[in-house]
Image 1 (cartoon, rainbow, N blue to C red):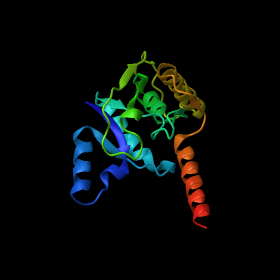
Image 2: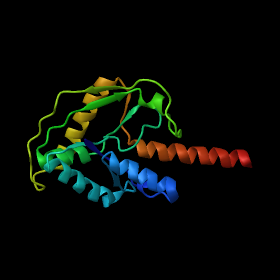
Image 3: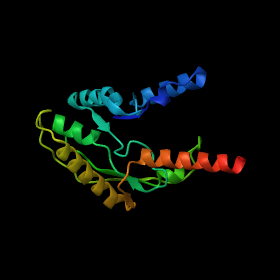
Image 4: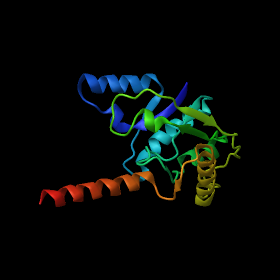
Length: 181
């Protein structure tokens, strides 16, 4: 089984539906990550490191959230940190067609096909925390992103997807407020 992080909201639902979601995600190897910013995701990264060190597989979506428009956005450095701390190789993976299967905001997926392309493993040398620099993290993250972008053919945007989502949400709210006046 490949373990993944999932946004904490998947595990916090109320009632029967909330309990079912928590059970489902847990049963398929997903564990919660707090994506609200700062150091809040460090607990999930530590859990991921334990998974890797125990010899299990761990997958991480480098953008940290779904793309708002199908383009590929700047990667977060968590995957690079995990690889450098553990010496675990990284297998860049492109997922093509998933957006068409389940568009943002939909609950039930559509019928169709998704293609998964695995790239060549990127070997990394294990380093101590003191040896890992921000440049190491950014450089490795950008290399992984470039490999995924080549395989997927997506247009690359050098901004974080979450920032763009927040800007789009604010723009939509402003437009709705203006049209209500």
